[in-house]
Image 1 (cartoon, each protein chain N blue to C red):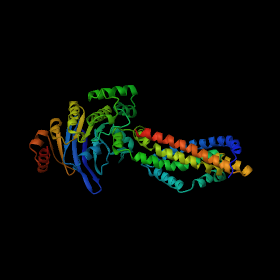
Image 2: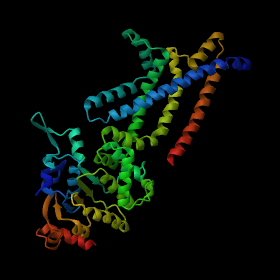
Image 3: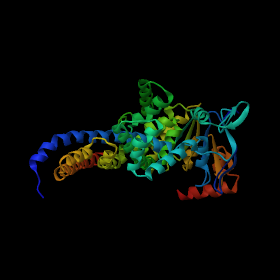
Image 4: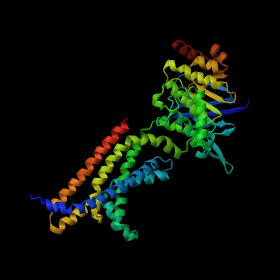
Length: 257
Length: 216
């Protein structure tokens, strides 16, 4: 298996609280992985350490075989500097629960500004790419709207287009439908469904939508107390969970529906 | 108290001329305070303590000493170490430096009011630190604090008479010169007071207008 992301014994603590406890996880190129678990189980933190929004306290994450938090300098392994992190981040994109669109920019500008500013692509080309992606998420008629003028679902679709415009190899989705009104969840999930057909895009999806996870994921990872309690193919994990904790969790979320 | 209208009229041109100096000094010093204050506010957030600590020290020292003493230092003490600056320049630097420590706090409040998610999105999109501030944070941080900055502009304007102490021929200094020529204080001081009042009131109205526009 050709892994694009490897979590090797990753540990993350906030004070005394252990959020990730020696997590080992290999993700293959193009794989769609759904991460499920109760709140506080470390799902989001897992994504955030990969996006370099949180440092790790132990272990290492490898992206395309290269360590994320360390680098070589004069034949010695040292902590990654900002230049190294910036180079690694080009491979990764993230969509947040709260959208985090830039409120002072139009939808179009939200998508093309990072392309232009960060990737150094000319304005015309950047706009072209932005229009293409906003069309793909069905917002071609909202190019000049500001985030405040858009619904949550529309904002989240802009955020997806914005992350994709940077052409990452790995996309991270952090509970992207949790802040949405129920009737707006579908339009966002449809965009993700469309994306899932792209074979070389690796996707890690933290979600509470169990049906969606089952439908879209190649593999489901169940996190419990900062550890991977169980993982497997969706049909196996949802129908025949081996772990008692998984069973309890699934029963509780399915009953809540 | 007799008020000599003819005398008042006769000194008005000189005072008008001096008020131009006052306004110039205010505007130049505000430019210094606005730019330097922003740099201090951003520098204070640096990950390097070699940058952070000197800035915190600078801000505390400047804020804890009177502007008048700082002006004296710039104009009367610096020449002893070989740095001689013209009065106007000393005044602009002194006033600007002094107020930059206040504006830096204003900017800091603005920067801290930008939600964490904005920083995270900018980081995830791989903006450099410079572009993160330039494109994402400052456009959100500065508009809400413009009224507060404007209040400091008015305070600076009202502090310009201190520049008289270092021989800048601004409004107060000119009024003092006129007064001492004939020992007539009523007219020059009244006019100076009215000029300050007039400019301040106009500025306040302008600020309120700006505030209303930004609130939209």
